[in-house]
Length: 265
Ligand code: PGA
Image 1 (cartoon, rainbow, N blue to C red):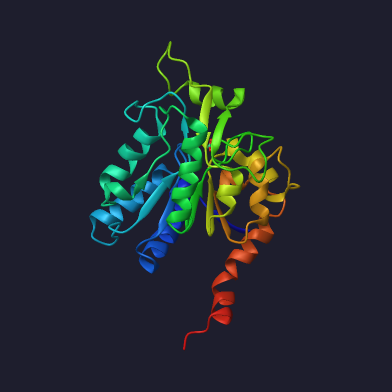
Image 2 (cartoon, protein in one colour; image 1 turned 30 degrees about the vertical axis):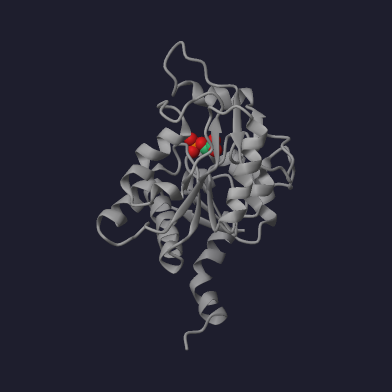
């Protein structure tokens, strides 16, 4: 796992947006897995800015979203579909037919999830998947105890997750208790994973995810065995890493190692 520690949230977003822009320029028809939540918002802002400045074309990009609350329609302001539209998709030129969303108002959820998996396969798999991390270690909505081989499916949300989302919902409106989420196995098949975490409230779970033993009790730990995960953190989120100095040393030497590994002709 590559660990990149940046001084603050803005620098973390610069790094992640730079990496994504580079991937899109290298492969214009990139299959991009999108995450919601507060953490990636600054990254989306930067990608929009690059697009508006004429520096990044999304015309062939295809997207799949990671998760969604069951029972919220796509126009509900708290649905992830709506959030992704307002914070990213409505501001870049991804063709509508290239946007694949898990939606929350569906009849046969299990069948719907199987079809979603088939769509990902038909697109050639996800090239790069953005994920955040919950305070309980979830990735997507794969809560603690989720099978490390799980596929896209309906799930019951943990009470901790409901509490984290409660303030975003208007008083009197309950946070949906059920969700659909890409599985951990689905995420692990992405060719590259970008794990983002910011803020001191994530420091303890980031330490477990990066340096702790691999366990379904902390789903994000599985990324330790993913062949190509970049974990991008701000200093507060990295503040409990026992090996922070080591991770920084590896990062400082990365450019030199790349020169050796891929010498210019
Ligand atoms: P956050 O959510 O980005 O809002 O912290 C992350 C998550 O729960 O996956």
